[in-house]
Length: 213
Image (tube, rainbow, N blue to C red; front, side):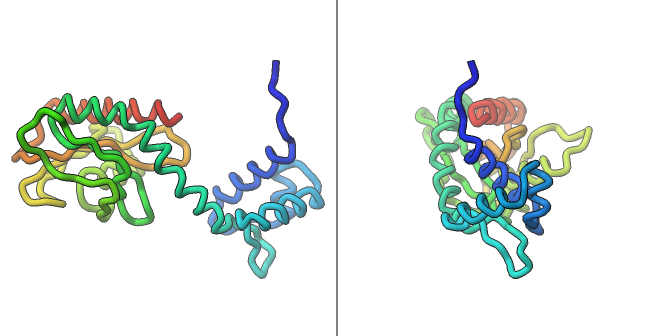
């Protein structure tokens, strides 16, 4: 039995998705064609979404995603963090290194969840909220590698001393999660990353991706 749904809400969400997929906005006519509804319906949808700051229209009449979406987006990180914690705990305990989930925030990598191992004598201190350029560190470089994957890509990234002297990192990108761009990795005090760590962070990234789908 199919659950009863709201056609208007469905159309409104489709408008937001269409606008999110374009950098240049869409006109009422373009939205009308894409949704398969008349212009009057589109005008009503846009007017409602504008009242909640989820859509804005420029002087040329093109509709774009509004700043109200950012307020909703701020609530995404806690949900993503909660979903990722079991895989991160397992990774940290297995490797004996600090595990983290990192997401893209503009041109930066933002650590949104961190788990430190419970049994080691020492480990790298790493905090949620830590930011660094995407071009530096295993977490950011893993994300960038996923944007241009090649046949010989091993599926993970290793770095040494790029964010902290004496520390090395390994990270694998999250793949197949709509709307989420990030990586899962570990950071440790070592000269080189042990051989098995690359495959292990890939497994953890797959676990997190499955939890977020």
